[in-house]
Amino acid sequence: KGAAGRFAQEFRSDCDTKLFGTAIKEHLLKNESDIVGATEGRQSSNGLVESHWKTMVRMARAFLTEKQMPRTFWFFAIVEAARRMNTIPGKYKGKLASPFVLVHGEGQDARTWFPLFSICYFNHSKDNTPSGPVKRSKHQSQTMDGIAIGRSVSNNGLLVYNPRTKKIYEAKGSYRLDSYRLPCSMYSSIKYDGGLFCSLLRDGNPPMEEKYPPGTRVERLDKSTMILRSGTVMDIPLTSAPTGDRQSDVRYSIQFDDGTYDSVPLSQMADIIPKPPVLADEGNNSSGLPPFLQPGQKITYEQDGQYVKGYLDFEDGVYYFGTKSHPLRRRFDTRTSIPNLRTQWADLCSQGILIPGHSAHSFLRTSTHASSSSTCDTFANLVSAVNLAKDCPASLMRALADSHPDREVWLQSYYEEKDGIESLGTFQRITAQQYRALREKGGPQALPSMCVL
Image (cartoon, rainbow, N blue to C red; front, side, top):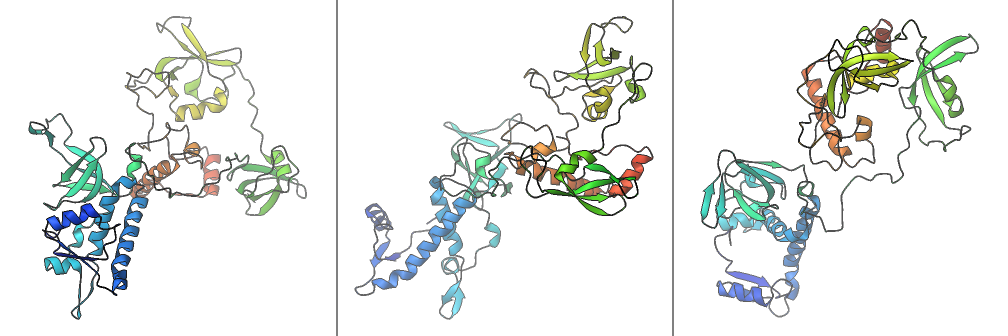
């Protein structure tokens, strides 16, 4: 009625109670619509109508399944299915014509089509109250979000349902559709009850941590030439060896720096991993540390989510972070040990936990111990995401693990950031050999990932 302007003058059906019950019959007859059944001996002619109805039901079920919508929205799915079927042309008096053309005299505008049940953002400057429409103030949001459920019958706008207010709005002005996000990811009240969930198939076995992942550096002594050869792990075995089994026949593919390849069994991998260099204690035991991390230097250290200014101290082979109430005070008021500073100082600086000097910071680091009233901005946040099932992971490896519930969100966010940087042309790709040559000349160490969560 909303699309054609009035009810149809005549309905032809076999009076199946599934389609035309008593209430529907009375409603149609009240609106001057006749219901004509098939004549005697011609009941088989209803096959075309039943076939169209079956197609319409399948289309509606596909709409609900695609957007993971509950069955309570079946009416809007049926309306959209009928609307699209009315645009399909057929032969009428020797020419092609669609039901829409026969009713309105012209074809349907394809610009009015939209992905059903998509997230819709639209302008909303007035609220309907019992006393009438009230205009929102400048301090209130002038937009609203919801689920696009159909076209308005009175104008060219969209019908948008907001699950929070449980009301249907008309998006008459400008609006924006987000067809990639599922409504159930934004509204907790929207739950799919169709029994069919579309998702990627994942292995139910818990992920095993690979001891020697691709990129691991190795050193192997060539017994024929007695030369120590360096190489890189290129491929790992498809099946992991049982825990503690060093005699398993799994093998790793190694590419040496001279371009040759070799296959190394698991039992020999631990022997060819280079041992970390032993740092010799010299003078005040500060060898291996840069000049700005010598004992007595000013540093800023993160404690309980907040940056604290202090000094680096060394005593009995252990490095400490100490604070003073006055710079000229000889003794420290508090001291906190910093274990493994010699081997982890680069990671501490890159992660923003340790900062040289007394830099002024107007923000706090995110911490579970920080009060809820404090401002918590993340340090070096390059990739962000919303509507997560879990808190921000500690590393990119954890965020992209197969078992992580937010893996797809972080993966999409990562590629958006990566493609954006590549489009700006701000960096140049180099090979692993070029990188090792730069490191030998004193170049900086490469970050394991451009993505810092």
